[in-house]
Image (cartoon, rainbow, N blue to C red):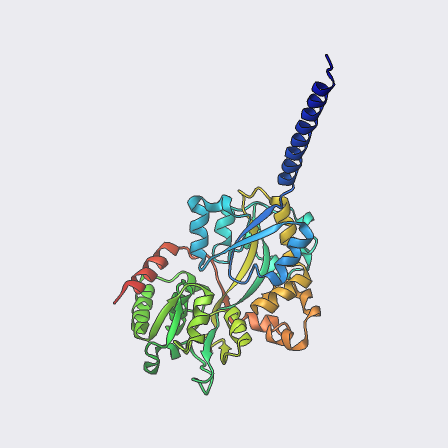
Length: 364
């Protein structure tokens, strides 16, 4: 009997099986080479494609970002079991120490951050992220919570936070859904004198007076904003003419030629130092470390300033800026500018402040 056809059939089956196996192995290899993803939980503006895309391309990865509206929101997500969902966070100076102390952030290997020594001495040497000899975060950007206003409404720039209580502004202002609004009212009441840090540790009586002051403001409040986009839209839609904001909103409104003004009133204002930290639950700590290094490099810091209008933690970024931008960021008089900003600190009685703030929002 001739066995050749059978042999050919067997050989064809063997070839087919080999091709299928090879295809499966190729597919598996393709899955194995899938781009790693770095997940961020940060303030608005901190994952803009203008500067993030270059890192994605150079490190063959994908960056996804979720945004927070307040420090309390960040802490709630981290403590609520969501820490493993994120690799990099950007806490501000009011909660950064408690996040590190709670073990929610990983200590950094500074030898892998060659740009770290370039950062501002004042910011780098602050005790905020230093625990037991370890450093848990890098200063990223800093800035004020200024008074924003529509220049077509205010022919003369307002010079005091007390303008928000003007009866002519009924339903025409917005305040931030944040404890900074409590501090702003406390400044109007003079509780920052002689010690600005007292804003973060007010007595029960002082908090009661602040509550009364802010309830008096409610007729003027069109909306309590939670995200920067909300405040920007309120101005663009001409629903408001003034409110506490961020330089980011000023930048965004100027890009669409809205007549926005920004000032630090005579009472001065609160502000923040934002850090980048790696969560202790991150499974991408090496890539996250490389991302931190990239974000504090002078050239990247210049791009971040372009987007946000915030001051860079790396002073060397000034060399890449035009003189106009350097002046707008006050890089020519940084020390003097910083004296007008009461940087956020930890609130020893944060729960009490939140209780008061919630009562203010609920008041009719």
